[in-house]
Length: 510
Image (tube, rainbow, N blue to C red; front, side, top):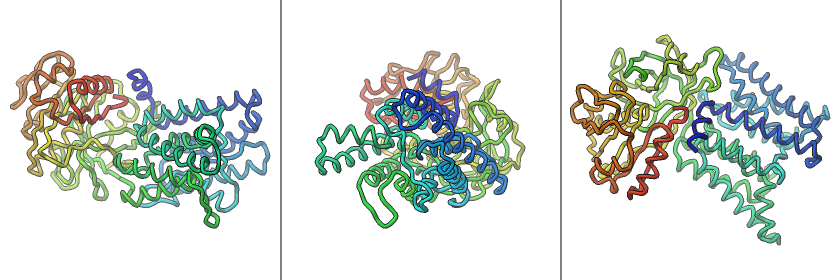
């Protein structure tokens, strides 16, 4: 899994999704050549070309009209989803309908929006509108036993990259259980009912490629799980109310709407104020939101950094807050309320997005797609806590500890902090101000050793070391943040030592 995390972390989420959709398209070609699908290779080629071209071109035109930045990968993904939703055909009468659906999907991003954020998955919204207006109906033709194994693999990779496996498992389990029960009541035997619902209904594809879209999800995991369970029931229980009937596209529209209402989703715009170097490789960036920005210490946002010639990692980067909510950070040129800070590592050869962020001019306004994350400390301040941070994984911990210090909250907290050199211990002064004991691991001890810090040695942080140095380890709630390999190893070793509650925040692409 380490190699998988490393591989997926090298690509942007959008690039991963697009590549996997194209792979499914190629696989469908193979089965079409073998005569195992109802559609010819010409049907598949023309339908895909029309769906993607119409969506990408209309998205580019609308971006100019609405003075927005065109995201060609996002538009191409929407086009591929539309291709998999509607009958593949070389018939011009069907092709123009598919093209129009692509235009409607692009329009939905700007028309069906609230305060700068689109409310619905564009492909689902367009499919729903297409069926409601009788333009063309979605058939979700990818749901076939022949393609099922490939959909399983592709969906898993998307969900692993987006950290949405619990969401998908909940939705699929509820939908398959409910759908199977409906068929069993109708007289179908149990085995046939389960296999039919699992392999011939598009539930897995919906979970992997549409329900899991971050822009239409709520901020917290428990909210995602609740909506996934509700969606599983909505999509599987038969009903017919006028022009409405149970379908994946209607379910997605309703769940997206519920998510928007539940969390009050709005667009986020941030004005860049300045930056400061925290270590040779870590830089903190200061932003002023155009409207109050609500977040919980430990959460993160996805920042969009438009620039020319983006590399494979794209124009968006996930960054954790390092400021406490509603607290002016020390890095700001002028201490004012409502400023927020984030930090990231910027190597000698950074990605194109990191390089563009590093070179920003103060006064530049960026957008963020949203705030997410469950890496938050317990509300009960009597619960003892262990924070383990590796490198840039210190960022959510800083936000959490700053917030506690500002609010006057006292916890039993031990922070274990590892860095690749003595100069890479970012936020050392801020951690001293928070008054939290720190055990530092690295090739050499920071000089001078900050007050309240203990140098643990040059080795890797392991479960054995934590058992020796952290008092009452088994009784603590552990929070692990940093490179995926470190997080995965410590999670296993802490479990073996009796730590029951472990929260992780692995930095893909670290």
